[in-house]
Image (cartoon, rainbow over all chains, first blue to last red; front, side):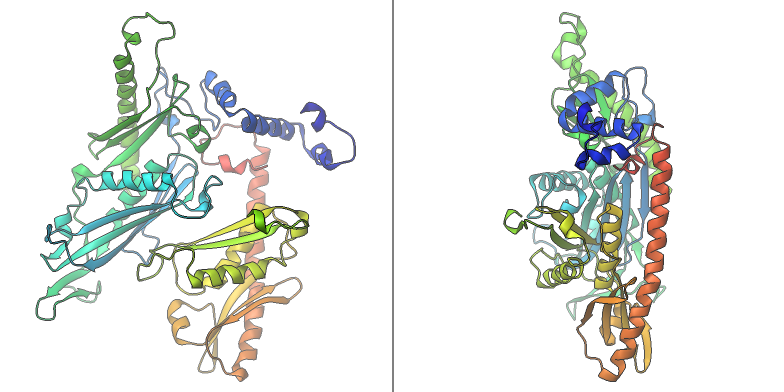
Amino acid sequence: MDTVLSSATPSATDVNSFLSAAEKEALKAATFQRLHPQIYLERFLEEKIRPDGRSIADDENEDTHAWRNVEVNVGSITTTSGSALVRLGNTTVVCGVKAEICEPELDNSDEGFLVPNVDLPALCSPKFKTGPPTEEAQVLSERLNEVLGNGMIPLSSLCIYPGKSAWVLYVDATVINYDGNVFDAALLAMVCALKNVSLPHAEFNPELNRTICTRPKSDSSKPARKLIIEEDLVPLSFSFGVFAGSYLLPDPTASEESLLDTTISIILNTRARILALSQLGTGVDKSEAPGQGVADIPHTREADTLARCISLAKKRQAVIMKKVYDT
Amino acid sequence: MRSQTYHDRANVNIEVAIAAFSASERRKRGRGDKRILELSQTLKSTFEPVIQTSLYPRSQIDIYIQVLQQDGGLLQACVNATTLALANAGIPMYDFVCAVTGGVHSTSPLLDLTLLEENDLPNVTVAVMPRSGKITLVSMETRLHVDRFEEIFRLAGEAGTVIHREMRRAVKDRTEQLVASMQSVGRPSTGADVGDNEY
């Protein structure tokens, strides 16, 4: 690689002679990352730092510089009932909520519907091609469906007239830029979009068998209303990855995500109580040398990792709460 | 796609995706939707002659457009966004392509129509290459009296040059930002400006 870069023969490689020394170094580093991604990441983590400059969450260093910056912007899409744009570092998700009227199910005649959906178009990352939703998109939609369907929006509050008319909320999220940790970003976008929703006043007229909605602000006795939200069940997700069984990485980027052997998601409510928890993989392997006592027993290893993740998530939650509730 | 490889130039592939929540009625449009395919095809024939495809033989340039909200001027916005995205990506083009919609209400000409205006009034979308003044796209799906057409057409062409000024300013600002951040390479970032180190 060195000979190619410093070659003086007039050819396509001549463009490298226009690069400064710093640019040549950066090109070598980028090439190395492509060819040996695992070793590239290891080299950074050994110095207790991640490729994008963030810290890792080791024992001495539990501060919040391990997480990427979060930006939330609500209400910018006026064709929706509620919308939100969330940026988690470079990962960008747009979510729009559309409300429609439908007939409730026979079994649950006093409940409306909540239909979340995530779209991972080819636009957001070179790893997605055009075509039907990939497995990743479907799994993401399903996980979000489970988390949101937990009662954050009581479905009975979406009923207009039992057995005849109810609201159905379509929560459509589109990932614009994929740089890892899409689950956290998409969930935050959906939660913020739902909080931003404003439903017009709706009345079912049994004689005409139709639902009449009143345009907001046209009649002050029939104002638009915000959704009824069960504050204790509002989910906020914090995801971690474990690399090479040793390093705990909060909020992984796309390049880190492909190298992780464990992913952990902690879902907290607004009062930092755990709503849901998932760990896929064996967690951090603390015992460097076997026979070191407590750390050697597998279930304490995992409990240790989970406990650390939970405490980190709780610290981060305080920061996110300010972002979400101040918008 | 392998079957569309050209030995002497790049293949330009444009795909438009319209979010379900972008219009006042929620509608999930698949990729095979005729209107979307027509839009993609129009954009492809607008940009194929403008991009210097002969510089990239046996390659493909994918352009993905995501529509978040619609309030008229969809084709116009797609053309302008594509021009800027190609400039941002560093893909060589012969010129910018700037598009504007024009319409007429009784005798008064209008520019840049909203959805409400587009549904009621005759309107035309015109895309122009500002440096040469050549028109690369004219699209009209309504009926407009031939006496009115010339005026609207000419006005829309001129408006294209105004858009061009704004586009140039945006590209220039972005380039200045990149140069500034390249000069500060070596400082740690918090992840938010990682994307600035583009090579």
